[in-house]
Amino acid sequence: MNPVVKGFFDPETWTVTYVAYEKLGSSCIIIDSVLSYDPKSGRTHSKLADEVIGFVRSAELKTEWILETHAHADHVTAAPYLQSHLGGKIAIGDHISVVQGVFKGIFHLEAGFAVDGSQFDELIKEDQVIHFGNLSFKALFVPGHTPACMAYLVGDAIFVGDTMFMPDVGTARCDFPGGDAHTLYQSIQKILSFPPQTRLFMCHDYPPNDRPVHFETTVAEERKSNIHMHDGISEAQFIEMRTTRDATLEMPVLILPAIQINIRAGELPPKEANGISYLKIPVNAL
Image (cartoon, rainbow, N blue to C red; front, side, top):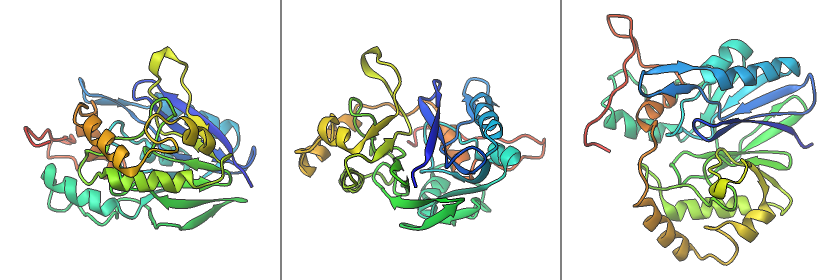
């Protein structure tokens, strides 16, 4: 059975949050939510998350899972906020422990910060299948952008996270800790091995040439037209392109707050004696 998919685009971070469900009144999953964060003031707001909540309620959907494809570096997850309003379990791939271990060191987090993924309600294993209502999703392990990336297959749809983008945008960077262009090439090949008509839903869109925002394509379109990974591109060519390109990219605006929050399943660091949570800025470390 194939899902109905509703996407919510956040123009501040170019991120898409998805709700996948069978029909009105059925169970649903929410994938890659966004809580807006203002780096100038350190304040959050929930405009996009509230739109998702409004839709889920108006469609009388039952939220069973709030999924992360990975610990994002470009936006803060709204998973705990959504859970407080809609219920459901917050889940991520079980390799998140690798990412937590790396960034606990980089940010010199508190000694009690666990690097076993226990901040999440559920850690999902490669190829695990989980049912929600009459639908199910299968976890596809697709590392490369990070060492812990998952994509989620639901019927004829794959939510690809940051493995790849729309054909005219290309593929994800691999220069974050644990990223690897060889591994990403193999992960993209895994996704592109699905039937041509398989729907692919991007986590981001960065429209070139002022085209309208789009975040759905197909395996066939990606294999034909992806500027980085169309049919005929060798692994060596991809690695050379990706390595050269990544060396020119700036860090995402929200990487410092986003990583610290997202590896905690969206919770803020423990409050200090004055009742306020603080995020760290490592100087000359990244």
